[in-house]
Image (cartoon, rainbow, N blue to C red; front, top):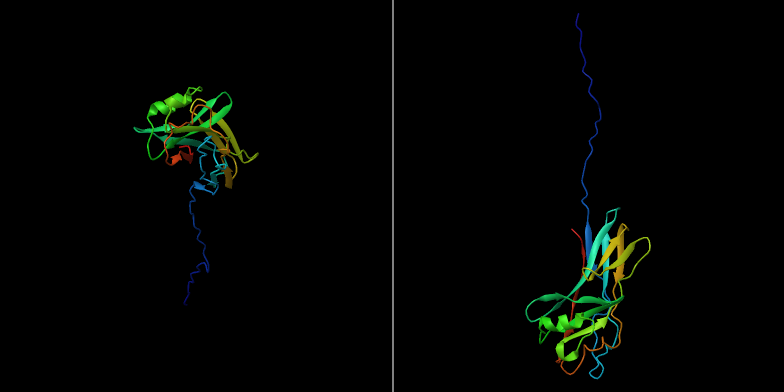
Amino acid sequence: MHFSQSAFAAQTTSQFFIVGCPETNSVATNGGNIAATINTDTGALSTSLNPGFTITTNNRGEKELTLSAKANTSTTTQNAIFNIGSARYIILTNNTVLPPIASLTDIKTGSPTAANNSNAIAYAINDPTNIPGQLSVAYNSGNKNWDLEVTHRGSTSTSVTIPSGTPLSGTYSSDDEAGSYKATITLSFNP
């Protein structure tokens, strides 16, 4: 007698893949007007400045960001944002003939004297755009910047506006030399 034993094996099998998707957070510039001309008689900006940003995250939770601005001086880079009461200002400095730090210090006192702040001019600046349910914005008077909190997964756009108009009194005069006046505005995720 001969018995045969048969072996039976599964005809199909399954595998699965596990692939991790890391958290991604990014900020990109998103248009807006970033150039104007200064009226030589009044110091007024010819048009509003309104740089825009797009915030993107794949996180469902809350993510914190900081919007700040820096201006160059003859020795270092300084915070360009300050407030007088509830009004906020940004200082633009001459990029051709850099001012001393003392020019920014004088402006930030809240009662500037034009002869003491050559090559630095302050303009009003509005809070960044607040978007209910997606982006909240709060001015941080201690750090002189804005704290933002994004609660929206995907892309969210915001901008900050420097309205056209005259500068803060006592910050524009014939002591301000010809050149390109600027500040660098930065929006970044907090670590």
